[in-house]
Image (tube, rainbow, N blue to C red; front, top):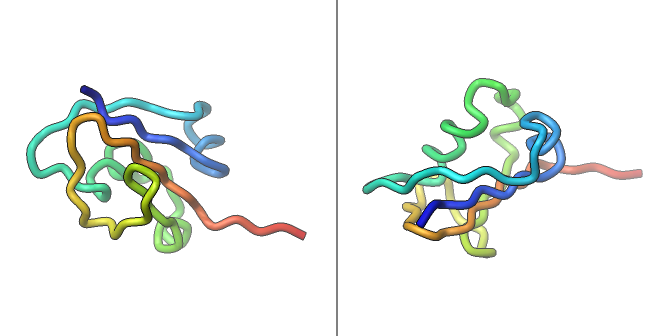
Length: 80
């Protein structure tokens, strides 16, 4: 089963879509998925503040992902 990556705010705008799918492989981490989907397009400062979730639970970037997982990249948001 593919891994589904949900994109929010800046990342959704950057890629022009709400989600993408990637093929799972052994040892894949949330950070790897971020690099494959967003890569160098993300501002390094924004990347430092991004939160990650796997299956609706916040996780560190070195968390391993599995077939069928749902990952979310949540950039910081501000309002006013």
